[in-house]
Image (cartoon, helix red, strand yellow):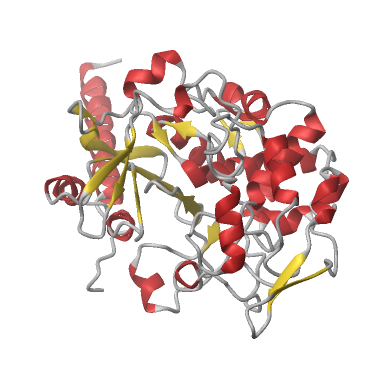
Length: 429
């Protein structure tokens, strides 16, 4: 090749590289990294959070990942990308994925009655409170199906929202949500939890309404019955090991212990109270039987990004297919419709406009709230009780994850602010 041709070749190559780089910068310039940094740092400095970690993926790569603050305030341990978090209800989409995988293998069908796998669920009566405040019971009009569980329309309660009325108090007192039973001090298996649950009333007839509930835990138990294994083993075999999610499980491994975040409660006055020391946690107990399909997993931001990428790419990750793309499409469709009442006022239409399998689905942008919080139509995802959130937006080929660790009576405002920045929206639009 002549010197002239070599120079021309490299000139063209440099122009191509420059053009590609400029296109890459322009393509992602809608997410202002400095603004995201400022948001997270300000949240720590203003004591809105103790520690926080965030990740944004867009059009083929992670375009933002950073951490601020402390994972353990008492020991002054910083949040890092390998910090292990309680993801609580972000477990639900993972369990939903397992259930859909079992359906693809024809080991179950969402139309199946739950009693086919857990017979004692048939014992649950529907409770009604009459005008005199007296609780009366009636039989189920129809059997609760697996799809009812998936969509939180089973009629079951939860027991984590406080005592809304006499019926929800029954669920609260049953302590279904606790890792360790407060009365016995023993870690209960999900089989034992089902026995407790079957003795409780339904809050409404199956299919009548939407009420965030213990339903996904029941689905986790269904998977155990079908496979004859603990839910953790099933998730390991079908998801975590094939995808390389080494940091996600129902308990803290010895090598994760020092990286496990402490959990706090944020009071109305804005103070953080330690409620679970990361270095002395039930999650670290090797005898822990709490494998809750609704709230039991721990994970890191990098590990959970693998799950988000799996769902973004239609059920496949690095050549390993977990779900058919049509199944993922089905999960991200609204299956509630607009005729079902939401029985939790703060977790209703102003929070989400639709509900799919394993998470909420954005189906419109009609309300002021939804138009401002960074959710585009098709947005699918969920959050965890201690402030973690994630979303998958297949329309825009992006996803986001935010990890923090405190319980509160209010949804952290940084959720909407982070999503808004990720979608290049502001509160003033």
